Image (tube, rainbow, N blue to C red; front, top):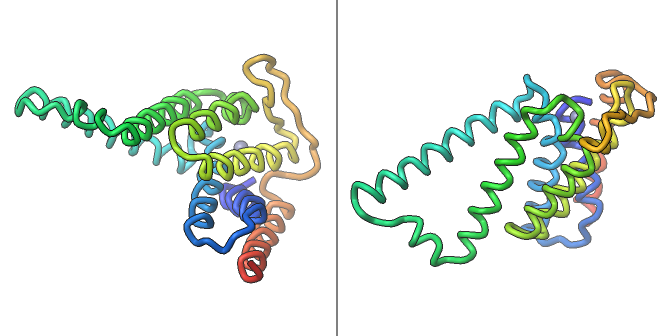
Amino acid sequence: MQCRTHIAFGVAVSTAMVHTGDIKTILITIAGATIGSAIPDLDSYNSELSQILNKITGIIVATITICLAITYILKIDILDKIVQYKNVTNILIGILLFLFISILGSNTKHRTFMHSLLCVGIYYLILSIFLSQSFAVPFTVGMLSHILLDLLNHIGVGLFCPFTEKRFCLDLCASNGVVNKVLFYVSVVFICIIRAIA
Ligand SMILES: [Zn+2]
């Protein structure tokens, strides 16, 4: 399926699970579902997401370099100051672990580790422990919805990678055919209806 279909479907499923009109909760749900439903295709070399990941990694490496330079040149230990704030430290550890798994996954074969249940579990643990449960849940729903849609076509998904190389598929439709288009528009309409009546 196309990236926009994965995102629309993931957001539709996640927002259907939100039973509140609280705008903050809805925005966190949409953000989590959007990233979660797009992230498995980081393993696709041409995906826009892997190009964004490269940029983010570059920014983080530059930031760490600047922090180290400030520490040694100006004798101000920025890391020490950050560690004093436990929440900030947790968030930083979470972001670094998240990036580590994402970079690792982006270098694996398409539809293997990044589309496995193990990967879903690792992301869920990182996000729920170091960031927030309210972000981790829609992110996980988004990832699972992506894997479910990929199961529909003949290419197959390495659900239990790295324990087995066996790929699973339902072979019901093409990844960029009519079903892809229908799913996208139905999901968008569904999101509009569910938000209108919430
Ligand atoms: Zn995929």
